[in-house]
Length: 371
Image (cartoon, rainbow, N blue to C red; front, side):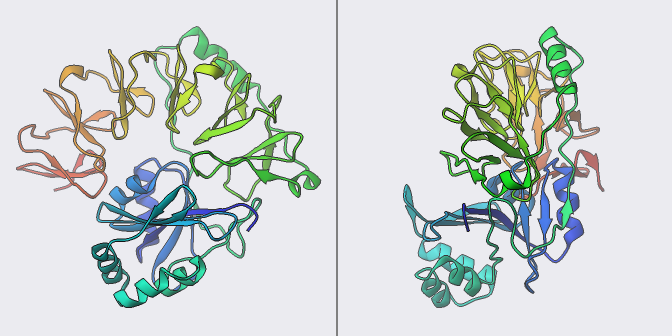
């Protein structure tokens, strides 16, 4: 394993349910069948974290193994509860006795077996727990075939187009990817993330390349990138001493020295971006992206970079991390849309399942009445 292993796992016997759930949550992912018998699926994505997936699936997890194969981190989200066992250089944590008992019950093994397995090497631990163990390399994933590939999450454009947005669109429309040759591919090494994230950027020592398909390539040249100052940030964002990049393409309007990101939303001193594209109405000085799924500034509420129309900003609140629902004094919202007929006083979203909720009269699924 020349770099590191980093993937999510979901336990279910219904592949179609995983596919539909990720699609409805606008999460781009590749689903892989590891060909083991206990209904675990590997989910490769940079569009969500374990906390988000834990809102969508009752039993899921995340595995990170560093290139030395000795440093690793295994986390589970069980009905929304996230628990972690870590053996990393900068993070040491063990499952508590209660957490070990909970995991043993969920996985159907004896707690004594789990305690023993936690003292072994990571691959022996995974084998004991019956969890997928896949070694991932710089350029491909060993011995697996792709499962279901979801399209990129939708990126609707704003109605109010600024000159900066028009300039950016013109820049992107003329952009063409230049693919790395086979000889270059063999030399590529991953540019590591300071946060331990799964970086899509690689270098051969002379130039920088980006892949949009996890480890499997193809790999595209990041034009004009300065290898000496190039740094991966989060999501598909990176920067060097002069430029900021998204999916390997330059964001010409972004100011490198002021640029900060959470993986989806980003901003510099003047402009706010969502997945590399300008959000023209957003105010960078007051932008707050700490809300689950949503963001807001001093004038508007946004969902995936799109204004949620008609919201009363002063009373807008997001229900919880898992639901995708929000409310203000007049309406219940799911994503950018008002939920028709939802009762303000009695509406309650699911605390564990994304997109579901109920009030005194109806149940709701993804913003529509379901009974």
